[in-house]
Image (cartoon, rainbow, N blue to C red; front, side):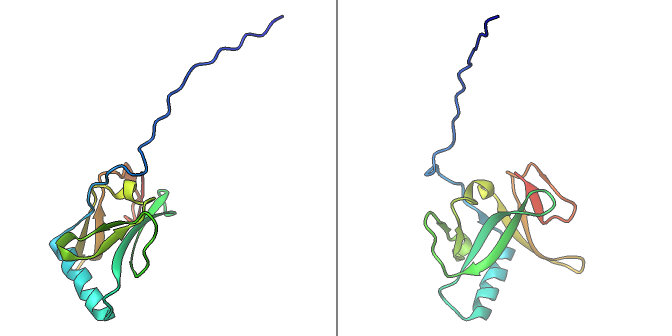
Amino acid sequence: MTSTETTTPVDITTAPADAPVKDVALSEAAAVKVRALLEQEGRDDLRLRIAVQPGGCAGLQYQLFFDERSLDGDVELRPHDVPVVVDRMSAPYLSGATIDFTDTIEQQGFTIDNPNASSGCACGNSFCG
């Protein structure tokens, strides 16, 4: 009995690390809120960092926070003249996303409309890329 092996070539391609990333947009309402929060902090070295981290119901979750750090590979943006940074690992997940701020009697907070999210969870805080 002889054994025969066959191999099938597979092409694996990935986007280059320096592939252009579409801007992350801020709505005017989000920009106004971020500027107000930055003013409350009283520091001119802070920027809004938008990141994607493992976790949440659907596998990935958003994080928005003020940060003075500069990380290698950060994508720096200035939508509505608001300083925003996205780390290089989060950038592909956030490409083309729009950050909004809602302030109603029913809801208050930032929301993210992300064209890269294939599904989300009921809580609205996490997504699957």
